[in-house]
Length: 146
Image 1 (cartoon, rainbow, N blue to C red):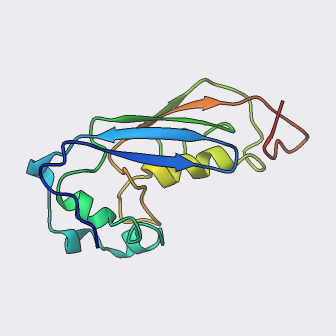
Image 2: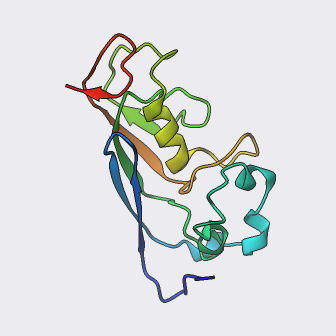
């Protein structure tokens, strides 16, 4: 198991989705907020299925939670009023059929969904999101770029 050390001033999280979305996040530690790695391994943490794979709890224990950072998401429109993102996500207002357009919101949630004891939380749960909706075509807007 690879663990980040306090000497690690920042690290980069690279997320790429099936729509060639690329987000690079520089996270600065906030040691005053750090807890033990085990304290982060809650039911909500385990719902993600991937946080253990990337040793996220160890990073959180060192204070790497995304606090003070904003991550850009270029994808289908993001529902910034979604309960896991409300108040921490911004976007350009575009009309969207939210019943069929979910990919951008899903990607934003993987990155920064709240750590609130409900469902799952994002990798950088304290980070903000700025969503730049891509123009897509097709009746359901299922990821075809114009």
